[in-house]
Length: 243
Image (cartoon, rainbow, N blue to C red; front, side, top):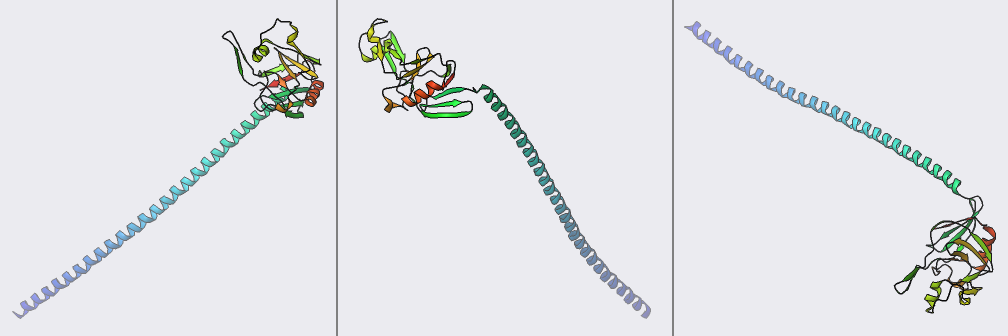
């Protein structure tokens, strides 16, 4: 009986010890699981950080490549524009007369006398008023200076103005016959006149205070000094550009 009690006691001790060992083992397993989870999280964070760095590096690389491509495109465009400008400069040089020529700006009522690429004189002039004159329902005249490229058709000293029909209509008096003496006026065009054709002249004016204003019937008016300079500079056939 005594031996049986000892055996039970021993068995009980073994069970208690086994239970304690189990509990300790279970705690170790749980602790290991927690440590493993933390390690896995750390590893995942580390891998994510590396991946994020690679993505950022890739983005920066592509940005640099894109910037380089844009710079290349800009350089190509710039080179193309420079070539076009050079071509236009050559074309302009080939079109520019080497002798004297005249440029009329009808918007600002200014002229520029050139010789080749050199500017000789720039000053005021007067061009068409753009006034519309009507003679009933049958006739009307628009007083504008024509635009385009012209050539000097002829040159005259002490020009005489043969008044056209509109001059009489404008004054409100009857229109005389074609060669009636009242059509001819002396001294109103200045000392010189240069013929552009189609009835348009470069001439002087009695009303120099109006120079710089659009007040003419289509001709180009200059003061006495500029008229003499242009008359002496331009020859028959010289170019006149009006814009």
